[in-house]
Image: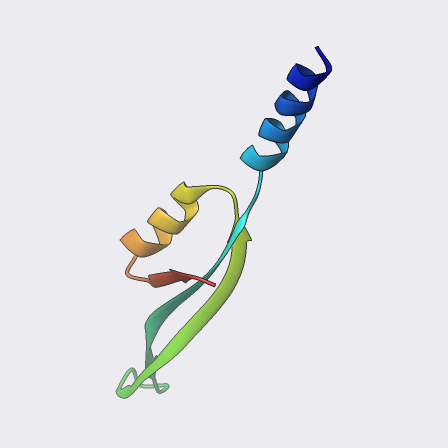
Length: 67
């Protein structure tokens, strides 16, 4: 019985582990009149246990990688 409880506790603790990601997107820079000044790379680092969050960012055009 003790082994079962230990295994259950370990399984629960591993199921909530988060993974850290770095996602980058290109941002269009403009001046006050709306003229394009070029692009800049926006990089965000975050940790999550929810893979859907990474998929949503990639669907919005980000390129994500595991850190």
